[in-house]
Length: 321
Length: 281
Image (cartoon, rainbow over the protein chains, first blue to last red):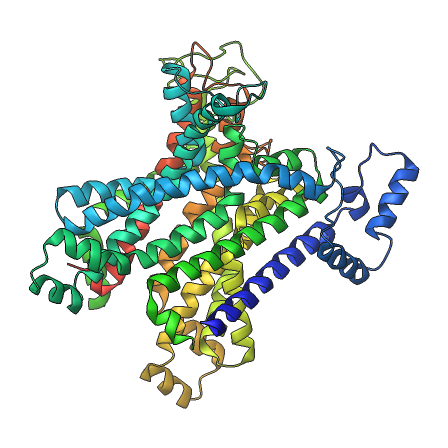
């Protein structure tokens, strides 16, 4: 187990390192002048010069790179051009909103995806399975703005039962009423993201369930006199869930950044919306910081997924010893 | 020859695949031929937000431009983007996948590690950053999409190559003294074409989705029509939640994007079933 974990941690750190280096060189390797990218034109010449020196933009590229990594270790991601606050603070303000959204999506995807996938596997080839497979095909092809527009049109514009965007109705309240209000704002973005992620969860659960149901131990379980419900719940599901958990874990990690479009449509004040705002303001320190955060999120989610899979599958847990 | 015949035979027995293929062919025809009949929508007219009717089959937008013409020109953009992205992804992904799968040395291990890591890095934010820096230009966007689509293609190519290199005819080719290039591209790539083709259709579908997402976020090319740009304009004008609602303005481009992607996915899935003998029933 410990060797397995160490290998994963090393790979995770390597992923973060490569992503960060990639953004560093992408931002600087562009044909345009890096100084003009990193320094806001609204600053006074003296402030610009100070900025250039603090970033070390007048030094050779590799020196800059070393400095950048050093600052990174100290938790210093620079200052936002547009908000004039430290990037770290800006990111940490937005992160809880994205995490809230993703938690809701994960709960919905697992709660709907696994039972539907199991149902499709049990009714393999029958009408229910075919309907589900059509929906899955549509689901993997869906375009997030489209589904968001439909939801907005129906629930916010026609029925007028849900808000059109934002995370709460200003001014910011307190207590139960405030959280209920936030919950109401959360529904549409969470549903939009769930729809786009559900298809994979259903497909993976279905396919692995079909495979698992052919295993010897399932026949054994039946021959011991268990009924179908118990066989599926106790014997099959834990094994069938392994690919689903892996896929959902990876998707959730990617979605910290992949939610850019959804958060933009619904004005949800998370990291995705921050990326959109930073792109429009050409706020490069924020973009760089946001990308670091995304890489960390992906790696952490991968790691948690590996732990969950190791817990579900003793062979991995024991095999590493 | 017999093998090819039966592959076609199985493909055409797959109703979804035929449907997808027809859709793909239709979109290609519209994108290639349509702009010859419909003038490029430019400037503005006085017919603002006209509902679908005889004069404008699919209505007009807030500048009074014909939605149908915008969609047709958008189809051309989508095709251009997905084909260019496909070529770029293939140019990077195929050689890397072949090399890392065929040779068994530190270099192939390194490539494999890179593929793994690139598969875990979220691509959309990277594309956003690059598009923002490189500037709004449809060719740039397509190049960026291609550059970021190579990892999955390389992975698929590598996996097939790993299997094929163990086969006897590769040993035979080696013992005949054929050059490595010839073995890789002629003997291995040709036999790995099944999974590779399937992945290429997925690259085309996801290129259109990503292009639409980038355009929707305002990183598209303002001088070309694309379905994502249309949606961006509709969204900026609050078209979804204003009353009376110009539903045709936001619904039509969305439907086009979804149809395009559904058709490519259906085609790809059917191709997968046909080229993989286990999937035939």
